[in-house]
Amino acid sequence: MHDVATHDDSKGQYFWVWGALLVLTAIEVVLAYKQVFQAARMLEILLILSIIKSALIIGYFMHMKFETAIMRWMITISVVACFIIMYFFFFPDAGRITTLGVK
Amino acid sequence: MAEATVVHDLPGSAHAAPGAYEAPFFGAYSKKVGMWLFLASDSLTFGALLFAFSYNRIYTTPWPTPFHTASISNATIMTACLLSSSLTMVLGVFAAQRGDRAWTRNWLLATMVFGTAFIVLHGMEWTKLIGEGLTLPGFPKPASAASGELADISKAVPQFPATFFGLTAMHMLHVTIGVIYLGVVALRKWFLPILGVLWLVGFLMIPSDNVFHYGIHALLIGLVLAAIILFLKPKDYDAHDVEVSGLYWHFVDLVWMFIFPLVYLMSTKIS
Image: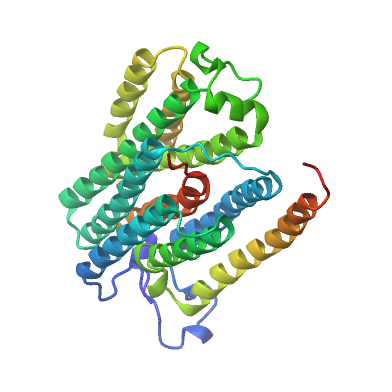
């Protein structure tokens, strides 16, 4: 346990994380430019890349990786659970509208 | 500071006498837990906006794809600015932990420069899009916005400008608050006149038909709030405060990692 994040940090790993985030961003831009995939597949891939980037930011830059397990899981589970609820509120209806014939 | 003087993990603390220090449930000091809880709630705000955007996008066919190379290049540079600002913020937290006040201030100022660059680039992008016709119903439109590709989109698919401006304005507001927050932590009361000058220069230099002629007043509101906070609790910000401000800043970066691909990259038009 620590007051401030005084764990055994080497600054080098933060530069690696920064580089990885820039590379992932470049991959996203290239995929969009080249239009390698159809829209739905592109959305899935961009979202996966965004989740990887956000995990890097939360884990390293926000030091969540170094927090206690109770804090990590309480925050993560509560937020993700809310997103799952939002998903089931929004998307079935959006899909339903597309099949109603409003063209 | 009270939290810094507390000795954690006292032997037998679970059975200590009433009033004795009890180890925190989350294993972190209260300000950090408070900020994490705020960020959890704020992530739901942005989550709801992003879900609303996706909802509109799914049921609106065809969804406009008006962003040409210039817009995507600009948004990519903005993304690089935010990612780089997160790195300088981490270096600022490290400097604060080792008690290096000069480098703490320098890294925080570097973070603010990247954040300000993001806001300025985003403001220029907004101005360009509005000038080309991407406008909201009921809002005043510049004469140049009467016709063109983006003007047609605004008429045919008003969900597009509504979701675009709604999401990006909310994020831009968060970045602005973040820059002011870091300015107060880095420079304390000395930041107030700087903020006042920035507001005045912005207000006088931005043309009156530009949306940011009024939007710049966010700086004035920030100035008043920061002055009240510094008046009520004039303090020297320590490593805890720098780390907590860093959490907020990284969150702003994190949100953009979803807005950039969903709003910009999924609406790319390659000509």
